[in-house]
Image 1 (cartoon, one colour):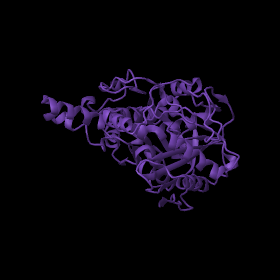
Image 2 (cartoon, rainbow, N blue to C red):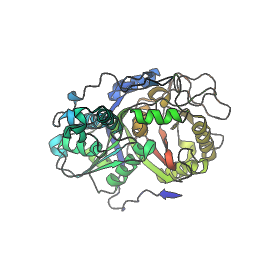
Image 3 (tube, helix red, strand yellow):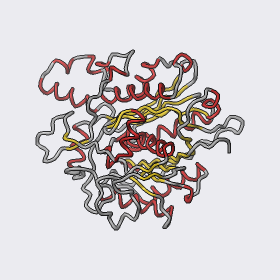
Image 4 (cartoon, rainbow, N blue to C red):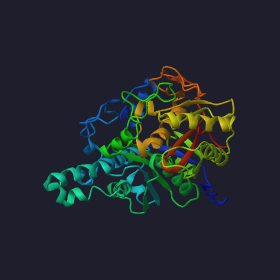
Amino acid sequence: MSERIPAAAPAATADRVVLTGFGLFSSIGVGADEFTAGLRAGRSGARPITVFDTEGFAHANGCEIVGFEPEKWIRNLRVEELGRATRFSVAAARMAVEDAGFDLDALRRQRGLVSIGTTDGESYDLDQLVGEDVAGGPEAMNPTAARRVPANRLSLAVAQELGLSRVEASTIATACAAGNYAIGYGYDAVRSGEVDFALCGGADAMCRKTFTGFYRLGTIAPDCCRPFDKDRKGILTGEGAGVLVLERLSSALARGARIYAEVLGYGLNCDAYHQVAPNQASVARCIQLALDNAGVKPGEVSLISAHGTGTKANDVTETRAIREVYGDSVPRTVSLKSMLGHTMGAASALAAIASSLAITHKFVPPTINHRETDPECEIDCVPNTSLDVDVRIVQNNALAFGGNNSVVIFGRYDGPR
């Protein structure tokens, strides 16, 4: 099993890392305010899929984004040359920079990192090209269409759109854990002084290829996603993007920025145990790595944002791994996928934003569609209704195919410590 021990920054340059801007597109809300309202209300993004042909499937609900207008956010690149996932990524990045109150001219003079996680890259557009090719359509030979497909466009296009020439642009493809991987990478780079800021997160667009794969595995729910419920039937695929602005605390204070939350630490590991099945011991180890790196004791955690896919195997394995670390004192543990569906590479990035908003606005989002907790999932999943709670520290879990696990710990910024 491989593990990533987060880099220890030199004492002279180490600084705390805070979150000062969010950009997000989801099926339950766009932007931090609308997303917060959706989380509080327990809004469901589930609806019949329209972004690709679902003929031949017995059931085809998903959590797609309706009414997305990329032209409102993408001002320097040609939208028609960007794939759907890249459009989400670029739009979310611009929103995050504006939300953070950055002056773009000043930002362009700084050293930065753009790190976007993904599962499918531009598989949605690849689906379309394959369909055109089979039909002999002209788009199959269109260079503009071909330029939309490379997955590295998710991060590179952000730098191009914002005119950031002093940045590293990386796309991380560790599937459903990729958003947390990107945040961990940005945390190390900012904390060590390697960069002045980081735009980190994840993006994915719903595509027929991934929907079909999960459907053939028997893990697509017929109606809605019911994490931790005894009658759960599986996931709903979703889409969207979440991009977070990370910067050193000293920088944020110097420019008078609003601070949503602080990144306290993270943990990564890869057990390569199975292509799709999670490994309990490995997940527990990753949680412990993150807590140790953050300097947080289990009893200090207010809330766990679980991976919580709504499949039989994941929910039981994940809750057992949590109990392995927390014993009988498990914090409230919720699954945002009950509302958002599984947004693949965007999942843990959107959950990271939700975790921070829970800290900022002092509430716990619910696990919706819940009727009766599976006896094998011994947690309080906050069924159906949000709670007003003074949330101070949140653990954000992400578990991916191939045993790629990532956990990030967020905390309230309360001034010097």
